[in-house]
Amino acid sequence: MNIGTQLMVIGSGAKTYYTPWFPKGADNAHFTCEIIHQNLGTSGGTVTITVYNKNREDAGIESQSPFTFSFSQLGTTGFYEAACANLKQLVRFKITVTPGTGTSDPQGVCYRFLPPTWYDKAV
Image (cartoon, rainbow, N blue to C red; front, side, top):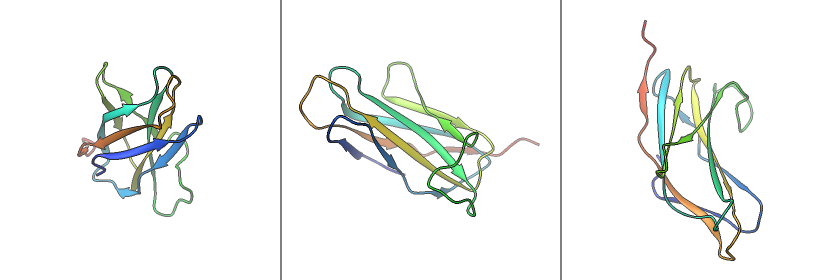
């Protein structure tokens, strides 16, 4: 898992980062990410995290919808979660950092993914 990784955005445009592909642990998963620290200006800065999954033989850096899942923020905390079902063989995260306004400092976030909760379908 990624622990204490820092992502920076230089300039005014959004920047996208991808984690490496990793094998799924079960059919379904619950992923949690914590934003440890962020400097995204005084307004308008955002972090968007998406889960992609695909089979080993599928081409491309991203899977196509409906095989994507979005993270949502837990209240006003720095934690984000995504519940994913019917995962394919490989999983990765796409993190998009959009800088805000109101600062001339470099903007970015420091994040960590908590260990996922894997579970199979009940039969």
